[in-house]
Image 1 (cartoon, rainbow, N blue to C red):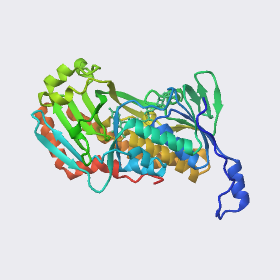
Image 2: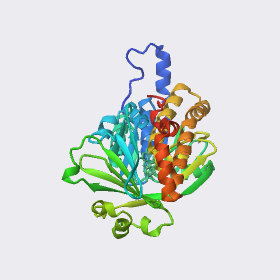
Image 3: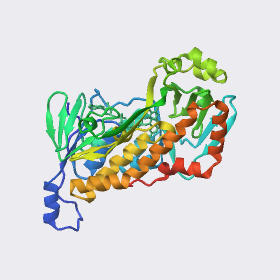
Image 4: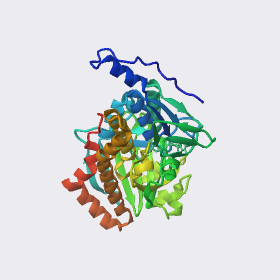
Length: 399
Ligand SMILES: Cc1cc2nc3c(=O)[nH]c(=O)nc-3n(C[C@H](O)[C@H](O)[C@H](O)COP(=O)(O)OP(=O)(O)OC[C@H]3O[C@@H](n4cnc5c(N)ncnc54)[C@H](O)[C@@H]3O)c2cc1C
């Protein structure tokens, strides 16, 4: 199914100082990209490439643009990328500024409070961000093919679809998530680790008294190895994330076992009673690649660098690397050189983000008193705060 039309482009822009033959030659050699996956990474790459003159087609296996999970935090870095892609206004419409994060121990005592000052962070319904990116991609002329499952790719630039089609392109972008078929067809994986913990996510309706508040305070309640995260994420909804160890069968069960969660968090009984709706559980994963590209294929998003969500940056890094990929390909016409420069420049901040996110997951398995003590110290340490906010404060390439 074709969705979105290609625009007719003038061969050169008004006011362009370059000679006509140069503009004409460049326009005539319009490059084509095929993208696997229409999540944060795939749609961001599609927008960024199409805005730089590429013809782009995205393949999404689902029957429409939709995302798993409920809410998402997008920090300054990701918000800058959304601005550069023309998706910001629609993405943050109605979303609260998530200005404060409180951590509470097993006795419901506050152990740390972090206030975001000087930089933005919004908590948003995920589907709103995907819709905004999808709309921006279509405006830029991207063709989005839904019900189109990718089976693999070759390094010489052929995307292989499950229905047997083989599509040639100047660039293939693998943005097909943690179980990426494209990445695996190219043997790029060096590490894939299921971490000991995971999360169940859901959206609940706001109560009248929760509406109309100025911004959002996230509250992270601990009880043993389990956690309840409460985050208002729109005018009408609250994002709830329940985290636990993966071997905790009662805690990972969906629909959420309200009786058990109320026993573990007696002070949150009224909140947990509201968590009986549709919920989704996912274990956290860590993925690392030998290289982020092979021949004409670039791998982005969770397919390249999945990380636990302890600093809420998987989507942010996915969008940063998608935009920077397009920027590097625009700066350097030689594909191999551009992909080398892209990885060399962009990978260090993603590697840092992965290290910090993994380290912040360690306390989950610690005894409650040690965890509360550590989290309280970490909340006061300027060095720790610098490490955890470094990605959010990073200025993404192309913004
Ligand atoms: C509990 C939890 C909380 C999180 N919270 C945050 C947060 O607050 N902030 C943040 O920035 N990040 C967060 N993340 C991380 C974030 O969700 C991911 O990093 C992000 O979704 C990655 O985007 P992606 O496009 O690479 O992959 P995905 O979102 O997985 O998208 C991949 C797309 O590819 C499609 N696809 C897959 N296989 C195929 C195929 N074979 N053919 C065609 N299409 C295919 C899928 O249907 C999907 O649409 C969280 C993650 C978890 C698990």
